[in-house]
Image 1 (cartoon, rainbow, N blue to C red):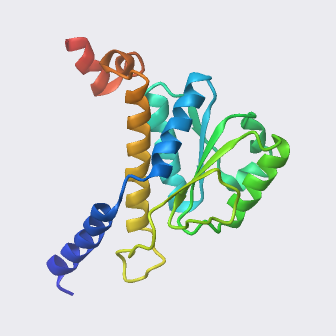
Image 2 (image 1 turned 90 degrees about the vertical axis):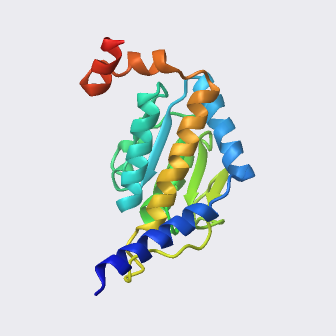
Length: 198
């Protein structure tokens, strides 16, 4: 294998997918809904299985670090009591490339039963019609995973991460996020040290 050539192919596949990503109406409406939930002090819950779950965990950590209360719920654990973490009117962001994960289908169905459909659900993935009930669907369409084994999440998780960052940062800045806000939530580490030097 020509390693240089193959590495460049992988890079180009992912670059092309990012270049084709568009800010659409559903993304903007989702951002507005998260802002509304933040103003009401509701929590933002993220969820997803496997690699998508790792992206969901990262988004939750980003939201929390910029002052928006958030945590991750594992769909497989949801049916074993973790549904109780989610209050009515909390907003749930689901990361699922196919939109067909059985664990997520069960989680969202049982969540709506528990909270009488009071949770707003956002789906992020390739499907425009995920197999679970969602109020807003952010789909990036058909993409080419960059591994020769096309089942390996690669391009899809890159797009999920970018969408998550677009949403989180736009929400934060629209509600007044600034340096002082960030400083209060980062007293430790190199970030904390950098603020103490200023």
